[in-house]
Every structure is written in structure tokens, then in C-alpha cells.
Image 1: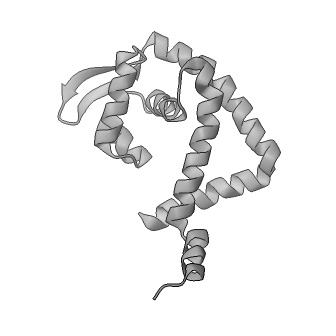
Image 2 (image 1 turned 30 degrees about the vertical axis):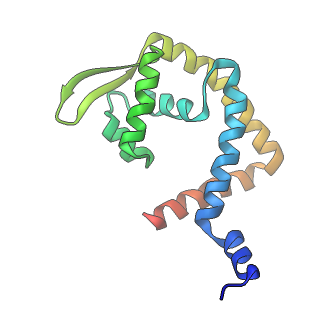
Length: 145
């Protein structure tokens, strides 16, 4: 029979449990910073992904970000409804995504908020510790893939 102490150890040591808890905390943190722009951290990440991988498809963006393509497609549709993103063409890989002028303007407004949020995290953790945490998260993701 499992003891409570064993379960607590799993809760503390399990990378999956810790990753989900960390992701929720980081999501809340960035959502609060982007709220004045009616933008979420996830939407900001999508805008960045689309802007940096010009002409990418939903499938390409999903593969790059590790997000389920169906979920990503719904999120992209939300950005399309807001006229922040448009899809062009219809090749085998799907429509190509690009930011609209409105999307680029919103991203220009959001980047300073991201920089400020990043500075807050850096102040709280220290630059080396934050960079180390980012490297560790990438390493865990690579090892689990």
C-alpha cells in the first residue's frame, strides 16, 4: 500500500508534475502582464512563432512548439477572428500563416511588456539562474521527446 510520504515525494520529484505547476504559474505571470493589451501569454507566443517562421503552417508551428495541432489550430483561428493573423494559400501542408498589420502593431506593443516581465523574473531569480532554468527545461523536453 502506498504511503502519503511516498506520494508527497512523487509530487516533489516528478518532472511532469513540476512542469505543469511551473507552466501554470508562468502562464498566470505573463497573462497578467499582457492583460492591458487583451492578450494572453499563449497568444503572444503564437504571434512570435508566426512572425519568426514567416509563412509557416499550423502543422509546422505545432511541430516547432510541441503543441497539439488541433489545439494550435483553434488558437490560430481566434487570432484570425481578431484580425491579428491571416492564412494564405492551401497547399498540402495547409495555409501559410502571417501577421496582419494589426498583429504586427500588437506585437510591437507587447514586446516591451514581455521585456519588463522578463526583467521582473531576472530580478527575482538572477540572470544566471533564469538562463539555467531555461536550459534545464529545454533539456528535460529533449530527453522526454
